[in-house]
Length: 203
Image 1 (cartoon, one colour):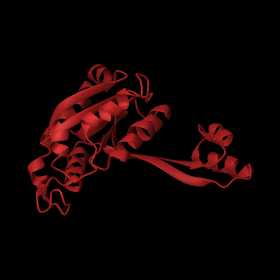
Image 2: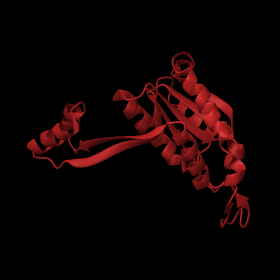
Image 3: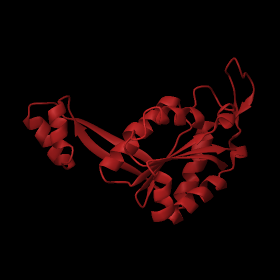
Image 4: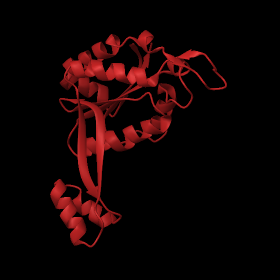
């Protein structure tokens, strides 16, 4: 696959080029190493594309996962406890896992275990490969990357999306670069408050 579009939010790309140049180069190599033709495996059952051979998001994600793993990129997960009390959430945000639960229960509230997980992390750079439904991208950008950044786990988040020409060769509902860039830009220059690099890839 190849990177054909790049958007830098809050100097995300500039950060990589100055502070993590080797990771930026590695990211480019990983994307280039994914053979999209091997993922052209899904026979459509949808009305508009019935019986047409499409790119399989599941196969593309698997190919990326294998390639990133070979280069030492690992999944990262942060667990935490939540409740329905806003003041209590603010109080427990910076606590360790055990203390969060104790504080919530001591306040007479039910502690609910939750977590944030990101696909690949290496040297404080997080990468999400998103060939799923469009709603997942908003969660990645406005929740996952932001949470890891605020929690001081990463310095920049990278979101990898298909461009429209590739997305049109997939099932309906898959997010695409051009549409998601519009969604980010219309929020204003400082939202989300995390340095990001959004990449549009093609086969």
